[in-house]
Length: 602
Image (cartoon, one colour):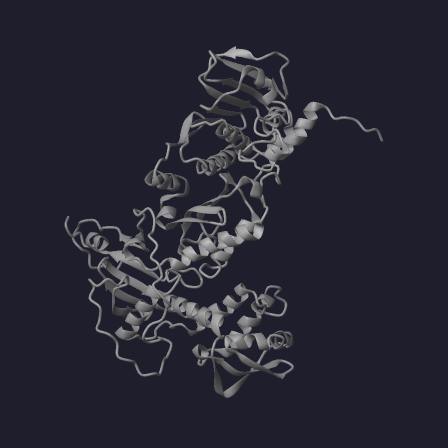
């Protein structure tokens, strides 16, 4: 076996396999270089999804004539020169591999001019740089890079490219992610001669919110709260969507570390934990978040495309991110002027048709409000009368609130279909899902009890023997002691049966067999053991199940004092905007929407 040095072009093509995945990665590398060059305006033009042409123009600092050829040489960069620089990287591209890698698989032309130069200079090549020296070229201050016929000399790679429309969408998404790294940047994208989007500079809060809406959509912005937390040398700022805005896919998750868009497992875990008891496990949160810290505390050189990072003090960063978002979500209280506002479409002005009068009107979320104010908690949750105490005499309740009083959820009026509470506040009408709201109230109380002395239990007058599988019985028996903290006192009654002697007072009339099945989850379920370990998440899952089973059920008739008590509890309960599964607990129908519904003032 003979050892030989590989040709330069083959070396660059191997590097291109790491850097140049598709047209979108080329655009990302070129635009990041423009940002590092101080560009304030960038224009991207594509043909055939970027496979035929990628042209990136910027108004950055430009490249000197004698530096142009060097820019297309591997490991040549202006961004680091010492090991200390590598440990404090604050730029995007810094390893000097992108341009030579792109050149190795395309026909590339680089034209640039500095402000102090009379004209620009151009170098070009196909796979390799041409032998000729830079040629004069007319060009404004800044840089233009043209990449034509991507993968022309590696046809096997080109065969793996998707359809033109698919490749263009990847470029569009990559640019939208980059658009959030610099709000002062003017960015334009064109495809096959047609403009796709153009973003102006975004200076000030209003303009920034407008850019967020342009990239993420108006609905995201209408369901988001702002965050700005600083401590321990870390800063987290941006927009966090409410749990009720949970997505079927993780398609609205933008996380930046020192301006660099990353996909980091540590940070992703912290954010999942922040949402863990306010969002359904199959839904995904949405956010645009910027984490800032000393570049020396983060290593961005652990992935070829620099989409992953490594933190020097990972646990501190994780806990900071989790704590900031978790506490933000807990602080949100009902604020009707900015919550789930239902906007009805006004019917066409015509003579009412009795046959059609029962057809439901369409509705949707009002997206006119850019973000939510955060209403701070005003104390521990709890009302004068716990709703779950069925069978107890009702205490005297205070006089009913007037709609004009400063109670966010107003006063109860009626119950609809045995499910929803209808209330009136000074903004209009409020609809509350009684079960979902009560579930959240109970869940938060149970968490407080568990954190204190454990959950009080109530002994059954007649212990109940429940048959389960042998493996399930073994699983439960191994956790008898830990389950006592949750108010569950169990004994082994036989090889395939469990005796329930005491349960939390909330579950005195619950289906105990169903409760045990939920706690087990089946002996073959690898995740079922998580219900019994001492981790906080596992404990909360048990509490969430208890709260769900104990909460008000559909078709239970509530009195007005009971409904008012629920509203007051919601106003004092953390995370009251959504139940434990992430469903919204209430919506606001404001007076303007009601006026439009009946054509008042028209």
